Length: 153
Image (cartoon, rainbow, N blue to C red):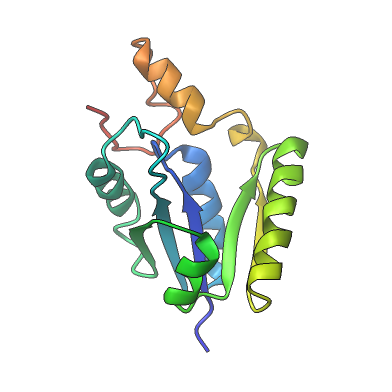
């Protein structure tokens, strides 16, 4: 059986923290699907096509990593993709409380699905997409927060 994980998120934009979690999880899974969740009630800052392009660029050297997008429940997407793991990164205790609740709900919805948490390395604890967007909107240099080679418009 293939150990397939889904790493869901908005990746608006992808950060060095996301990149770090994915690279560190490569030995754990045969395949990782970076799944960009589309929330119709929420307006993304960056275009979906750009986010897909950036993620593909970052992980071009890793054939076991692919990118996709989805709408609806993550558990339904996991079932569709025959994934038995959800990968999540934890930066803070608040992240843990939120992610634990979501993980437990997902387990109730699909008992065959396991949520795997990786702790963010200390260098990336303060980085999240919202902060990167805010710095970007105000003309700041975000290059230290996003993966190397990514050029935001």
